[in-house]
Amino acid sequence: QDQELVEPKVLRSPVTLPLQAVKLPVPWIGGHFWTRGYGSVPGPTIRVKPGETLRIRLENRLGPGPGYDGCDIRNSNLGFFLNPDTICALNHSNLHVHGLHVSAKGDEDNVLRHIGPGENKWYQFHIPKNHMGGTHWYHPHFHH
Image (cartoon, rainbow, N blue to C red):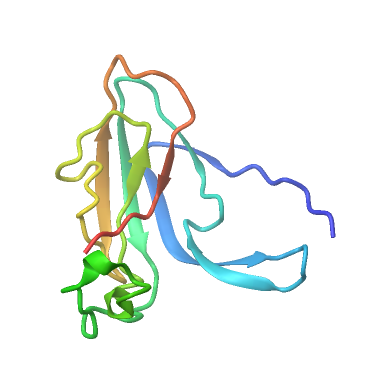
């Protein structure tokens, strides 16, 4: 079944990204599957210029899911195949960018930032005035 390529929406700061369950088709075998996305997969294109501050409000619209209650990260260095108890807090998230030369602290590209189900938080990415152009990307990147 042929499907047309759908270009994602193009947005400018400030941006609201709703992290939610997204249903995607599997055209080569039929049916569908569920994943997490920012309203769609891929999420919207966000345009920003050097010297601007990119403001993104991440809204975690995922349900509670498994939390930290059953999480045992004492042996997390073994990976989840050898220690499946490290799989927890699946609906907790944050936002991580690739290619942007921004701070890894505070409310910028901080992979240790925590946004639980039902929580909303703002990000402010201060794009340097001498930042190169390009196609950069963003995705959830939650660490325990």
